[in-house]
Amino acid sequence: MAPRIVVVDYHKGNLKSVERGLAAAGAEAFASDDPAAIVRADAVVLPGVGAFADAAATMEALGQTEAVRERIAAGVPFLGICLGMHLMFEEGVEGAPEEDDEASTHNARGLAVLPGVVGALPKSDAAGRAYKVPHVGWNTVVPPDCQLSELLDVAVFPSTRPSRDPGMPCLGSAEQGAPARAHSVGSNGPLGCSMRTEVRGASAIPRISGVGETLADVDGSASDSKFSCPLFEAIPAGEYFYFTHGYIAPDGPFVIGKTAHSVTFPSAVQYGEAAFGVQFHPEKSSDAGAQLLRNFVNIVKGA
Image (cartoon, rainbow, N blue to C red):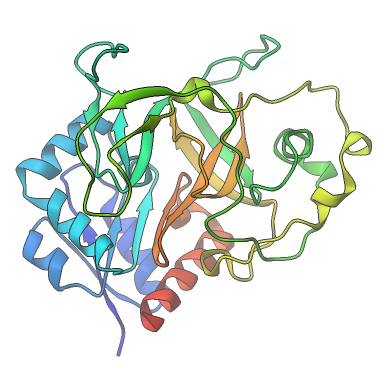
């Protein structure tokens, strides 16, 4: 029997293409804004179009926020896509009513499955070179253990991309060495992550080193990187996916994939065994996206 996967309708998301992609992957996919439908489904997909604050407010008003949090806490498979991945975090600056400060947070509140603040994607790199933001188009996703210089070459100079094998460690090894600022955002949440945490904004994302680097400058060990997380089964490191976004998630040990534009940023994250988020749109990412959706459906079948 095909697993029943609800595509959460928070009146902002890209529903039909996600439904079709999941159906092609072997699921019985349906869209609903009803919290009861979220609770009954075998898995939950939170699609992504719109602004963080608006989407979070609508989900809260519709009673979806706690339903989604409870399902993730129970270990039910979950996939957040683009804005849906952003909403997995504690806070987001997009659409926030006023600027945040050190004493308190004025950011919009997310699902708080993962710690941190979703911030704006910088419009220039560390050397001052300008990048188009929003970031729209095809870009590569690699494991978090790839060196920044190699990631730059993979993302900006795809013709020099080395071939890679599939596979990468889940709940990865990304470093969190950048400075953090503390926000008091409440007591411990039900999902096992402290909601009073060192929150990392977009400024904490490591910046890319110089464009002049080539693959000859790269540590050869990075070329051996591979995905092992089941969400990326049979997908080679350095594969292309379709992106359209102007905001990025914070770094952390939950990162299972990363991408470079003006900075390196998390393009795939994981909470627990079966909750995932991706910055790109798998439903618009051709064969690689179709494979990722099949992998998610297989995760649901095995749950």
